[in-house]
Amino acid sequence: MSDARQPGTLVLTGASGGIGAALALAYAEPGRSMALIGRNAERLAASAAACEARGAQVTTAQIDVTDAEALCTWLREFDRQTPVEILIANAGISGGRGPDGRLEDQATATRQLRVNLEGAVNTVHALLEPMHRRKHGRIVLMSSLSALRALPDAPAYSASKAGLLAYGDALRGTLRRKGISVTVICPGFVTSPMSARYLGPRPGELPADRAAALMRRGIDRGRAHVVFPAHLGLAMRASHFLPATLSDAIMRRFGFRIAPEE
Image 1 (cartoon, rainbow, N blue to C red):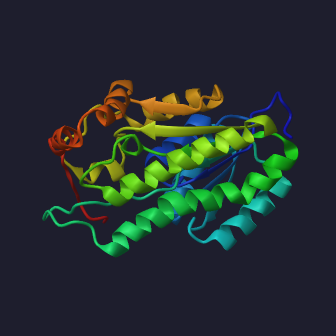
Image 2: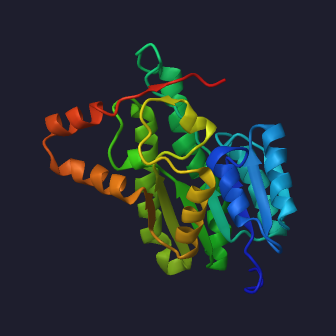
């Protein structure tokens, strides 16, 4: 276990851009050891350099979170050298109805489930046993407001994020007495390349740095859920008390299309 006077060692997946890069910066500080994992080497290096400029000690790795064996091997070795206290499973991709109105194809849908849900499970299980043995740690899962009420134009994305919410809630009930906290983050729109692909209204969109500050505050306080914007989270939850036909009609008013990845 790290010295209590020093910032804890942190692992963050999906650290090469968007929310991941902003979260990395939010946690970068003198005395902090960080492992940043991403797929894009150039953006990952830029994120690492920005964190190092703030005094953090950074290690990077190019790993696809769907490669469970490679991910586990690398994370276990990193943990042996620097015991991990905070694990943020943030890596994710989006998809949905395209600009031409067509539904996403099977490959796109399956890839989202694999990266967003299976990838997070791979990440957690790589370090769950060491954290359990130490009886200490924080696990953070990056879900979405779409976990609270599925988006009609993004079924696979919504399913993957709802799965993460359920997975996190179940883990929390299991691990609470083991000294491990679990936080599930359900953000709305956050300014990022992923968010920019949504061709439609983005109510309540927050700058990435502001969103990251909200996330860190909730994580550091050990909150079970971090949901923002709060009013949209409340509306998403309340929609389940409406008849399905009315709820669906309301959601269709906020329909969007997804531009292809560049």
